[in-house]
Length: 232
Image 1 (cartoon, rainbow, N blue to C red):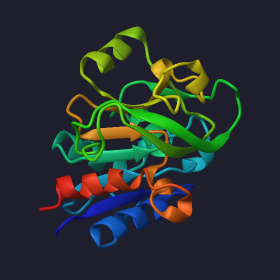
Image 2 (image 1 turned 45 degrees about the vertical axis):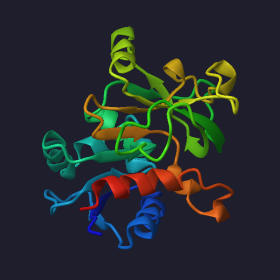
Image 3 (image 1 turned 120 degrees about the horizontal axis):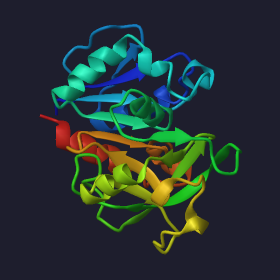
């Protein structure tokens, strides 16, 4: 099985090794770890922007990282259809770089949140979610201070019409309401795709729900589905 991923490492990344371990355990080989000052990438099947606090979250979360030299190459690869995954800070970077619409604001409670949440899978029809079923409820950890997804009404309507919402915060019973929303995100959005579903940004950390030692393995099918979809 041939599968090659690249994990981009920014100053302040702290989940790069976590997601590299999940990818290695799934694919059987480690991903490339690429420092953000690089200006090119070899041929890869997946590009990952990991969680953390790139540049100390100065200015805005992800804003400085979005200007890193490697991002020009990543934008070029995205135009060519190479799948890109952004988790937590990676999601923020994708939005700041214009690769996904909207922005991640400070949590409504103005506090850092680190706990498990339940998510409702909105679609299983993507390379990122093909091991889940639409409507399935999964439990995945979050750890962020700026996860409040915001976009104007037109963008939100477009995300709905294009079936580009990947995950929503929900109750364990699957109800989408304010009681299940940890950060104030519009429409309880926890993750979104681009129009072609080749880019996914999500605030929860599936790499922290990969092994039983993590007190849950609902993130494992996420990586298994990606590798299966992209392996030659």
